Image 1 (tube, rainbow, N blue to C red):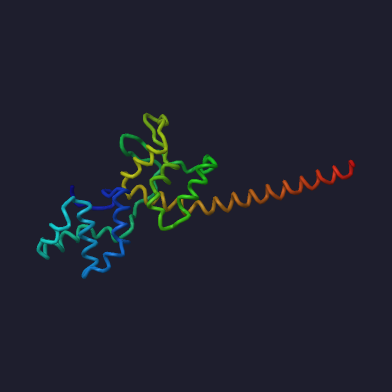
Image 2: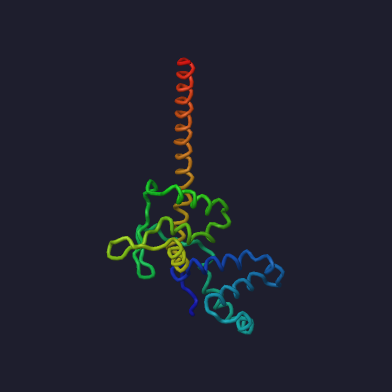
Length: 201
């Protein structure tokens, strides 16, 4: 395997593994934790054992580490409406009115812990991304969609996750307002019915 040149060559699955390395507190005990993390990430990409990187001359090691400098910056790609992945064209559903109640609940559950959003990003994207072949919606289980999303490039996934996570609170507030209005209407109606019953008796 080769060292990726940019986020287009990094999958969601690899990003999750990278974040695990970055957040591993035990690495902080190393003499040079930043170098240790860089070598572990390089090993993740190339398949070359960590022990072999330890034997590389410093000038060559610095050159290898410089190849993954792009990981220190967030992807700068735009939100896409459609993308090709694993033999399918995936259409992104931006019409939130089409969400089912279960999908709405799933989104909330998957994003309520901000530290686990990208760990759950494949499941989140399975809610909004619809696989198609020849412009016909493909019949695919949620589990299969979630599995395929793990291999999707971060350059595609990241801006979509950010977009829907920013949009969801607005939608959530709108639904809360609607439910509050509905609850008020129902309470008022029930009070009127109760008064009519009292008058009838």
